[in-house]
Image (cartoon, rainbow, N blue to C red):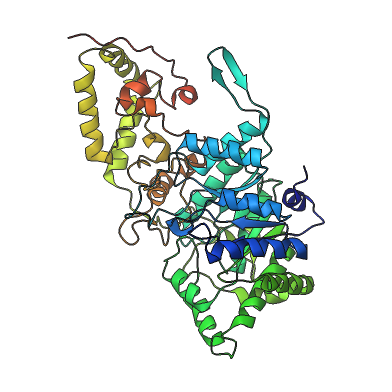
Length: 522
C-alpha cells in the first residue's frame, strides 16, 4: 500500500510538508472534531503529505493519537503519529506497535516525551521504561520480522511496515547539552531512525548547523525542519521555559511585541516569518518541513507553503531576519561572516570551560574502576572469585546490603541490579535523570538544567559530559547502545550481576556468564 509521506521524504524532487494537529483531551469535543475537519481540508488541498498527531503533549492527557490516526486515514491523507515513551512500559509499546501496523498507521515520530504534569486525581507516575533508541531498535527488528524464543524454538513474525523517525534539538545553550544531543542522534540513527525532525527554534544558524552536521557524518537520511507559527502569548511561555525544549529568545519576544501592535495583532507577520523559514530550510537542503501552531487553519498552512516556495529562490536574503542566538550560546561550527551561517569547520572545544563541576566522587569512581572493574585490572580476578563464592549462599544478602548502602551514599542507587554507572560517567541515569535515559539526554534541558528541576538540578548528561571531557573521554557517550534495565535483576546485587556476566555489560566486556547457585536453606 502506498505511503505518500514516506515517498515524499525519499523523493529528492519533492519538498515534504506535514501539519501538526493537537486533538486534545476528550472524545467528542470541539478539538477532536476540528482535527478531523482539518484532515478533510488537507486531503482535498493536496499540498500536505501527512498530518502529525501529538501524544499527550505537555505531559497532559489527550485522546490517543493512534485512534485519531485511523480516522485521518479514512479522509485520504497519511497520519504521522508522535510516539512517546513516557506513559507505557515496553510490553505496552510493543502491543501498540502491532496495533498500529495492523491498522495501516505506518508513520511514527519516536521521542522521549514531556515529563508527566497532570491527570486524573493529580500528577501521574511517569513510566520511561525504555527510551526512543530502544523503541527504534524494536521497530527495526519488527520491520525485518521480529524473532524471539518460544516454547518450541525461535518464532519469527511477518515483517512490519513502519516508517519511524526521531527528533534532535540543535537549540541548546551549553556545549555539554548540544554535544550530548548529537551523540544521542548517532545512536538513534544506528538504532534505525529513518528520518529526523528538528526541535522548535528560530535561529537560522542553528538550523544550518544540524543539517550540516548530519551531512558531514555521511548519513543519507531525510531531515525535516520544524516551523511553528508563533503568537506572542506562546512565545512568552516558551521564553520562560514553560514548554520544555522550545527556544524563544528575549530578542524575538521583543519583535513579536512590536508586531502585535498592528491591527491584525501580528497575524500576517507570523505567517510571513513562517514562510521565510520554509524558504531558508528548502535552500539549506532540508527534505521537508513540519508546520505547527496554536489555532492555525488550513489556509494559513497553504499560505506558508505557497509564499515559502516563492521566496525560496532568494533564501539567503532572509537569514539576517533569523539572528536569534541564545546569549553566550554554543555553536558546533565556526561562524561564516559572509552568510552569517556556519563554515564547515567545527569550533575548538578542547579549551572551552566545563559546564558542570567534576566532583571528587568521579575521581574516586574511576580509581575504583581502574583497580577492579574491568577484566585485566589488578583486583578483577579476586573480585570475580569472591562473587562466585558469595553467589547463591547466605553471604549474598549482607554482600548486597553493603553494596547497596555504599551506592546509595555515593550515587543515590535505585537498586535496579543492571547498573549503567560506567556508561554515563558514573552519573546514575536511573536516579539522577527523572526520565531514566540510559542513552543520552532528552530534549527538555534548558541552560544546562534538568527539565523537571529547572535552576535546581543540572541535567545528568551535562554532568556526565563535563566529567568525561575533563579527561578527554566525552565520546564514550556516543558509543554502544545501552539496553533498558532487565527487571529480572531488580533488587539484586549489581556487583554480582556484573562480575558473573549477567547484566547488559557482559557481552561488550567479554565476561563469561556464571550460573547462579541455589541459595542455602539456612
